[in-house]
Length: 413
Length: 126
Image (cartoon, rainbow over all chains, first blue to last red; front, side, top):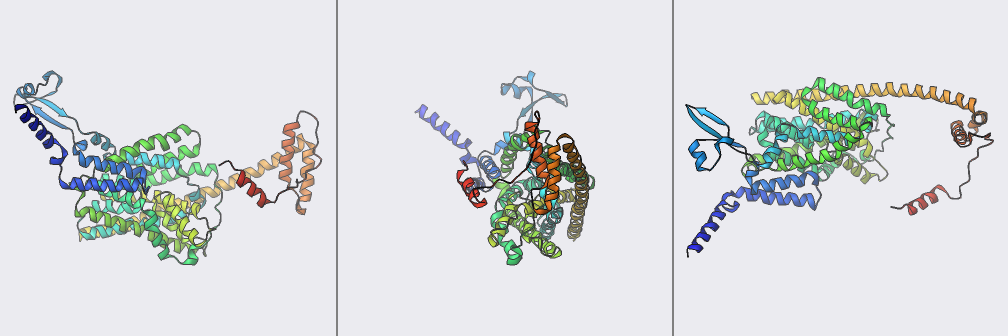
């Protein structure tokens, strides 16, 4: 009987210590949401490289919140140390009012330490380094007017900022972080949010990557609604070949101009251009390969799981998150629309030489947005190849969103 | 009201700064591209002139072929540059013994461009 009693007590103790009795209902809802995101990542292949780690981080933090636990230091007296059977000799001491206290440190959870790379703004510029190594700025150099379309798409960011401020439920810093979702650039959104509104990092990062994954669904209806069949059928002339020297000089010039005019954008643009210089110079092949493969993959894993780990149930499941999701979608749609409208203006200005569809690619989301321009263009004219033309505004959008981020940071920080 | 004012100021500042920075980049990129393209064109011309002279000195046959061909170019024949390249290739292979390129003719292909494309497509390993 005694044995059965003790066994029962152990079972009760295990149950009270388990997640079933400790976790609030919101955590379970978040676990279900994480399953849905895993489904989208694996089955539908929506941005799986980031959505899968984010979803898994979301799942694990809601089942075991201590994995994001902060490190704590407890001051114990000598008696308490002895009671806990701890060796006082291996602890540092603090003397208060003549009493010696031993500093007993409990280390934080695994994700807490990995999260420092996000919190300190280290991971997003490193991701940009890898993106720089993979980006071909040739179409942009061949047709520098594409920069206008990259700038136009950023209008969505600033208009959304106004709307978010008018709603009155967000501070200006929070509104700025939400608006940057319109840039359709995950690392930029994370970089800005960690500096302006770190408390909103989870919902903003999830919204940004979700909308980037949904580019093929969100953009085409807007593009079709704003253009005529004739405009969509415009065939653009071939781009001129770009010499190696032009490609090498480009990142150096961009980093000089942007860093001087907008120092807050320097970490993102600087690393993007460093990566591109690695690629174009052709003399540091090893560094280029490491930055775009191993380093990028490692950072992507750390960034994904730790961003996912910021979405604990109590923080994530509220009206604010719904507001962020709605405003983020609005920003994204607006950015697409602004790009297409500017594309139409450029089409008129050049006497019909520019297909307005390439304007939508100004929202970054490389290379998905450019592929969408190509796809929608080919629906009207199967012989029309807009991909390389759309890559110009697409990579200009990356620079444009980093510049817009610099503006938000310099004004709102 | 204060927030709204700040938001409008940021909207204007954002528009202006983003456009100014990117327009500045357009100007700079366009300018340096023009300079580089112009510099490379003049360098290419100089190089081409040098090459013609060198080929003429080292291989009289090639020079003759180029000269002959330059005369024929207007008639829709093989361009002089192509002849020079072919002569240089021949020189690279037979350079150690006396040789002369007497004529260069286009070879007749048994298949049309379309049928060659079809063969290529069907015989591509993957």
